[in-house]
Amino acid sequence: MSGHSKWSTIKRKKAAVDAKRGKIFTKLIKEITIATREGGNDPNGNPRLRLAIDNAKSANMPMDNIERAIKKASGELEGVSYSELNYEGYGPSGVALFIECVTDNKNRTVAEVRHILSKYGGSLGETGSVAWMFDRKGVIAFPAQEKTEDDIYEIILETGADDLVLEDDFFEVTTPIENFEPTRKALVEAGLAIENASLQWIAKNTVDISGEAAEKLEKMIDALEDNDDVQNVFTNADFADED
Image (cartoon, rainbow, N blue to C red; front, side, top):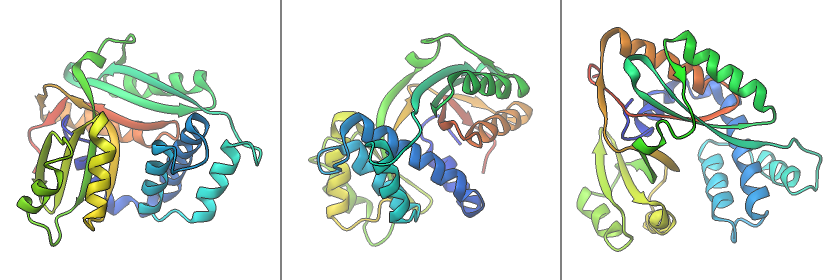
């Protein structure tokens, strides 16, 4: 887990994905719902919806679920009204936290987020208190299969990507927001199986955290991510003692 990317968290938790598939589907359906209401029900003209559908397919969500979520969001079926909320706060040792939520009850969500932060030695901050520590970036992760690092550089050279990192058996490409979709499209057209593609809040600078504070922060993030209203959690912490 690090402030550079959420993918390292996702990757280490893949063994638990099946056990939490219901929660993952709930979060994906919320994103499909928000994307549809924001930009319409045609994925060809709605990049956010197209990305949400691709991520749902990557998580093996049945097409019936995806189509039902789109129909509910577009008014063809009765559905729930969701709102997007961002919360900023602090974890153990004062590390920064940026928390993205989608909810049908704002009062419930803020109360639950505040409770989780407090339980593990953190606190909720004011709007803007930590957002300045992060940049909004696109992050695309995929298995390091068949293609070499030079191959990937050649693919993304013309798309305006910021960075390429090889971590264990996964490549991770970071891009400015405006170059996210062209880069993702170029990688897909090159035959790469995208494991995760999303817009994330990437810390401009990270702070090392270890020992008891790191354990508390990891439990805090796990508890937040286990909450149905929380879509994503980002931190500027770099877990210095992890393998």
